[in-house]
Amino acid sequence: MKLLENKSAIITGATRGIGRGIAIEFAKQGANVAFTYSSSVEAANALENELKALGVNAKGYQSNAADFDAAQNLAAEVLKEFGAIDILINNAGITKDNLLMRISEEDFDKVIEVNLKSVFNLTKAVIRPMMKQRGGSIINMSSVVGLKGNAGQTNYAASKAGIVGFSKSVALELGSRNIRSNVIAPGFIETEMTDKLDEKVVQGWRDSIPLKRGGTPEDIANACVFLASDMSAYITGQTLSVDGGMLT
Image (tube, rainbow, N blue to C red):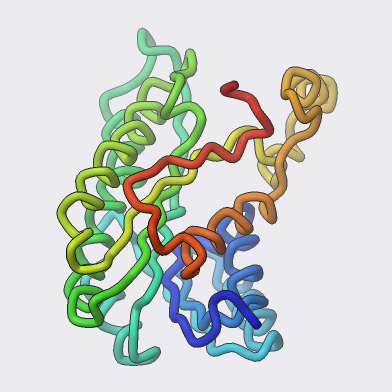
C-alpha cells in the first residue's frame, strides 16, 4: 500500500535539492505531482519524465511563488489538470546572507518575499479547493535557523521563523475543515549547494551533529510523506525538526 496513493501535491522549488527529493519520494508513494521551478527548463523536463516513469501524473510549472497572482493562477491550473489539491509543500526559498551591519534593504526584502510571502500566496491559493474537499495537508519548510537564529542570516532567520507563526495560525483557522498545517525544520542537509563548500568545514558541521552526519533530501522527504499522509491525521500546528539532533 502506497501512503499517498491517488493524492495530488503541489511542491514549490522542486528541480533540485530538498524539493527534488520530496517530489521523487512522493511519486514513489503514489502521489501525482505538480511542481514549480523558476528558471531551469531542462531540469524541470528531466524531473517530469523521472516522475512519470514512476507511474504517476506529473507536470512542471514555471511560476514565481513570490508573485500573488502567479500563485492563484498556478492553483487554478493544477486543479484543472489534476482534479484536486490534497497536499501543498511550500519549499521554494533563497538566501542572501550578510551581517546586519552590511545587509541591504533590498536583500532583506527579497528574502522575506521569496521565503515568507510565497507561503502566504500559495496557502491562500489552495485553501478554497481544500475547504471544498474538506481535507488537505499543508507543509511549510522552515529551518533550524528559524528556530535558533544564525549570525549573518537575520533576513533568512526572520523569514523562516515567520513561517512557523503563520503555519500555527493556519492550523487554528482551518482545523475545523480537516485541513492540517505543519512545519518541517531541516538541519544541515547535504545537497548540490553544500557540495561547493570546503570539505573540512562540512566535516566540522557533521562532527557537531549528534547523529554525526548531514541529512539527505530523502530524510526530509520521508518526514513530508508522514505529514502528508493519513498516518498524521491528528497532527496539526506542529514543527518537526529533522536535524540529526542539532537543536537537542
